[in-house]
Length: 159
Image (cartoon, rainbow, N blue to C red; front, side):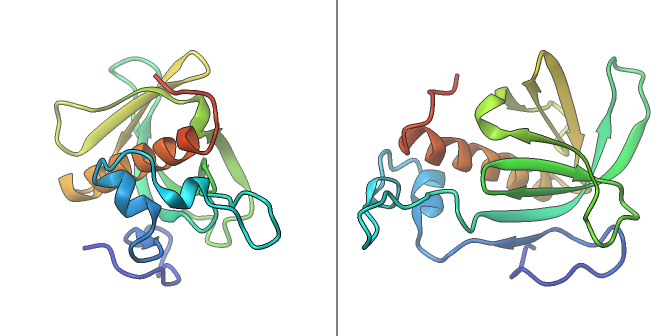
């Protein structure tokens, strides 16, 4: 199971997750439509950033173009509306291999294989595989929830 955000142990540690309890993520994940957190005003009069503090990281495998490509281990981080990948041995996580703003993701879907999910970004299909079906669903629903929050906060609508 996914627990509180703790420092990873080893280069391919289990995913960690940090979501404020009872926040807009919970509402979006439950399909509650517009939520107050995404439209509330901060004390200084600015709209609160609904993506601040959203965090999920852990090991996933990614496969290049085509169906015959080799699955490559990577470390992924979902934070602030960005999905970022790192080499699995980069324990400091200071050299990103690439990042994708979730606003640019389309066609997000779970694959027929229960441990895989995919989406399109920048004209390419990105295929990801988790160790378990539960981890794949956690990543999928987290990306979906952050997309919903971004859309409700005034970002461009996502297909």
